[in-house]
Image 1 (tube, rainbow, N blue to C red):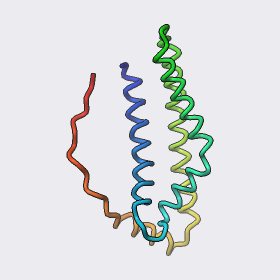
Image 2 (cartoon, one colour):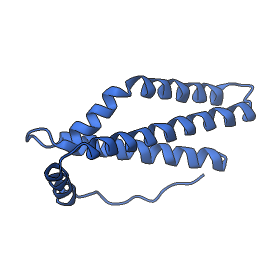
Image 3 (cartoon, one colour):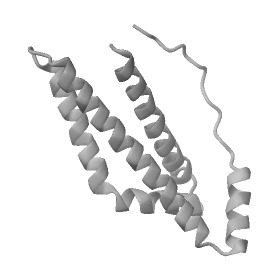
Length: 133
């Protein structure tokens, strides 16, 4: 596996873990919906078509890997395309969250800061070493 693919897969994994962690963390509470959850859910709903397109591009990359006549150059172009899409999606997410925070009153921002600072993260299991082949 080349370095470009490894980097892209790590970035993809981190982005998915970040978004998934935020969503799972917010959904695991049975209290009223929290602001962070509502913001993430709003973004996810608004960008459903982008996430579907990203899923399709990943499927294309997998098909390229399965092809008996593997074209490394075309695969690199596909990986670059996926990386750009993920980067664009992350930037859009950050800008969307910033826009929502800018629209808050000073009291809402203070409450948001308080919630973010006092989050209780569930304990993590034992760390497993990463395998590089």
